[in-house]
Image (cartoon, rainbow, N blue to C red; front, side):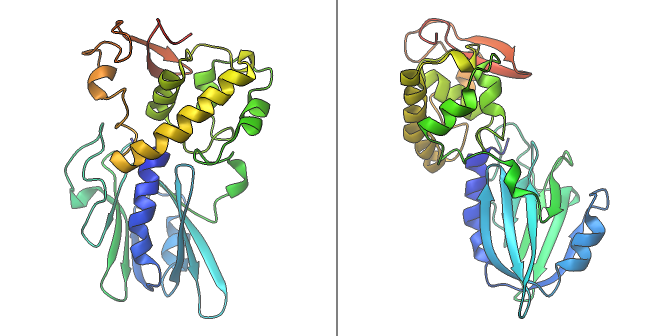
Length: 260
């Protein structure tokens, strides 16, 4: 599923569209802002491709003034395709097909280029001028002070708190499991109970492992890989059977021996 790492890969691909002018737009009519997007994007030029957490942002500009910002949230199975090429050909838990019937947004540019969002489940959401203030610090930018303050005295499981996009923007289920495993922290630990040294260890795990996973291809490229998540492999660190259970409404995979 597209987490912040996948959307960063999408953003890099979307940079090809910077400087291009929109010729026309096709969008799934089930989208709440379909009419506005279809009406406001044509003749606009893509000025920048940005990312906040799991949200890809395309800033548009007119001849003399700034235009709207198009927000692309990819849901569980949305893929970005630019000029016929997909930077991620297949999501780990999605289909490898590129069925035109699954295109939920198609932007054609005057130079002949095309940007598409292909999503078999229709969970991708497209908005104009999304509220960027609702997100916490990005997964690559969060620091010890900010995270310690966010944890505060919260009794909720640290896994659930880290999935809150107002706490850390861009972390998803796979990335949180990975950094908690690396830091030796149980996903069940109350967030507010973590001592500063353990928060520092968690930040170190994020700074070391998330960029490496990004360069390897995304959130499924950690030590806790799909085979380990499926229960077919023991803990890569100590050989113990990995545990699978729901934490904060999401399936968590963790080692009950070294994650405490």
